[in-house]
Image (cartoon, rainbow, N blue to C red; front, top):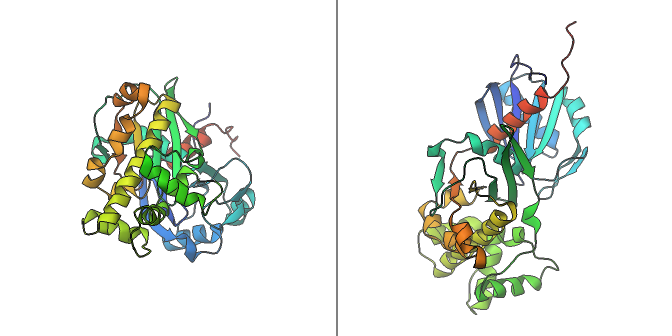
Length: 331
């Protein structure tokens, strides 16, 4: 196997979500600098965002890895939660890059997990990870991401998934009422429809309807703020319900992947909840798995508190990709 090219020039890495695009330059192995967050809505095209970031830094790059909240594998990309649509090869050529590697954003996050330090994680509940076992990753942001990572022959391999789009599964009467409310508006209700940042206002509206309460339409930030300050009972119930639903998703991922290496929780929502999440119904729901309750109780659940973990994962995947390329003969 060839070795990856050395860092003669910086490498561009990015984490593209439905709302924000985060960029950095990897100037040496594992060293990320010039981290910046750009609003996707400020750029009409994907390539414009890359040019905007590189214009700020003045850097010349040859290799780039983009973690994107979207299925990857074909040259044509149309984002699920944003209006960007582009050709990977055409964008690479237009930017003058030798390499433009696209990876799923949660595959990049999963690849970052083995490199995280203990102070970049917050344990929620008990459990003990089995060394070398499969690891599951879930996270709520603009969408709902799911992925896995496993150790095979001494190397970490990521498992890409679109598991956030499975059908939503209610676990009690309250969640059944939320689902029935959603059925009035949607033919199919995915887990992502509710267990995501945009899903929080939908849960709020559904609970108000179920409780026959008069409640104004609120955005996600307002609901979360009122819930954390404990100034609005319906907002607090909304966030409790969200955390319980995420517990069901995480439990399903745990048994689907046999993720005895742990379930790691990322995304833009949960890391901002702090102690509220630790006290929420999340872990209780995670362990409420019928005949597999004891199985899940042994699996640790940890919140990723590192600020930009997917950027490090994208850098690792780019290094591995370049190492697999045939060596170029010297001129």
